[in-house]
Length: 78
Image 1 (cartoon, rainbow, N blue to C red):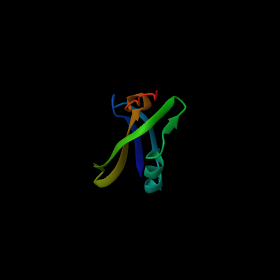
Image 2 (image 1 turned 180 degrees about the vertical axis):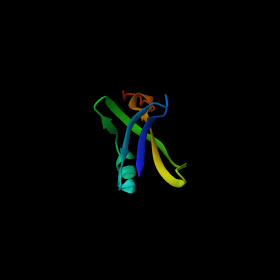
Image 3 (image 1 turned 120 degrees about the horizontal axis):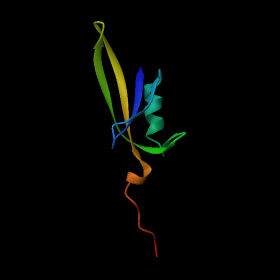
Image 4 (image 1 turned 90 degrees about the vertical axis):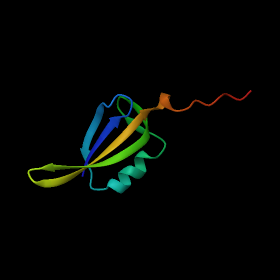
């Protein structure tokens, strides 16, 4: 299945890939963070899109990521 990683805030596509283990991929991205050579991100949500190409329905998993700085900061303990 075609998988696309997108930044939620900007809509920018950061990676497109094909995976045969979608359940494993989703479990992995829902972990601590998702790291690319250009930064680390947190899983936000995902969608499963269907589209028609040459009279054939295709599926595409879109995984939305948020920057780590977008997470709610915790206050330091005193």
